Length: 150
Ligand code: CUA
Image (cartoon, rainbow, N blue to C red; front, side, top):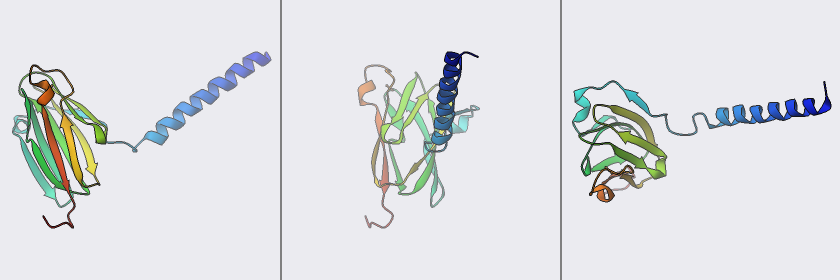
């Protein structure tokens, strides 16, 4: 084998190794991967369900030009399953601080799970142009410190 061939093989192996390493490294570091789950009418009713102190489900319905529920109150440390659908056109669902990027599609349910460790207000914005009210389409996740008395 020519020495330049060997060099190319070595570089290829190194780059491949780097790719595999970065995939393994990133695994579990971010949110659950979004998933598409079978459509069910029960998901089309906006609500927040508390399963226990630290586990919540949010059924979010996007429609021109708002999200319902528009304010979601949870305690810090809570893990939230978001189930997302749309009543009309395609909307976006972005929580930039949490690296959440979903599409709200009529007849579809998209799901992702997010943990909110830090108290604060997390903006949910529509990041898919959906008509004249698009730029005003947003909601909030309000994460309270359970130790603070309100
Ligand atoms: Cu909904 Cu843009």
